Every structure is written in C-alpha cells, then in structure tokens.
Image (cartoon, rainbow, N blue to C red):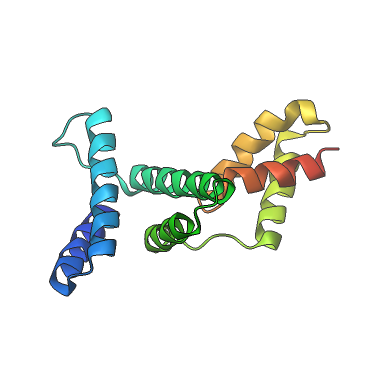
Length: 150
C-alpha cells in the first residue's frame, strides 16, 4: 500500500470515527499531496512514495516553524495543536536514524568525498543525504557535518 493509499484509508477511518482533528490534518496533507502531484505532471499524476515523503517532511517542517512562532507569541494552545498535527504526520514517515547511525553515515560520506575542510561541506551533505535516504533531518545532518569538518 502506497503512502497516498494509506492516507486515503486513514482519512476514511477518521471520518467513521468522527475524529475531526485528525480528519482536518489528513485533509490538509491530502491537499498538499495533490498540489505536489499537479506540479509534477498534472492532477491525474500519482506521486511516488519518495515524492510523498518530501511533501510530508515539508508539512512537518512548516508546523515546527509555526511552533517556534507561537511560542514566541505566547500562544500555548496553538503550540499544542501544531504538536498534535506533527504527531499525526510523523506516523507516515519512516523511522528516523539514531545518532550513531547518522554519525556513521556522515563519516562515510566524508571519506567517500575526500573532504578535509568546511569548503567541501556541500558535497558531503549531498552524499550524506543520499545515504540517509530521507530518514534524517537536513539540519541534524548539517550540524554533524560541521562537527566533523572543523
């Protein structure tokens, strides 16, 4: 079952359960997936799971950014709403890599590229993101690469 099919199934289940919060979150996600499908080749085009993962990560990142803004604005009720939406969205993302696994990937990417300074960070990041296969946050990878390339 593809991610899109799983979301459709869960959307129907949320309707049956009358879970309005989850229903609203899944509808926003489905809309974002549809917009991405249109961008990639038309409304009838189906997104691959890799493309759907990209959309999911963007949605999670948007909510994380919103949380920061709401915390600064003193809106704890909206922070909780965004955190709940993130939890729903993260259920569709693959399990993230551990810190040790990320360090191993970064070390391997540095050896592969032959990087010795921060000037080669872009090449290392590209190799590390390819190896992580979407299971790691870009910011987290960036911090690790900077630590290794001093």
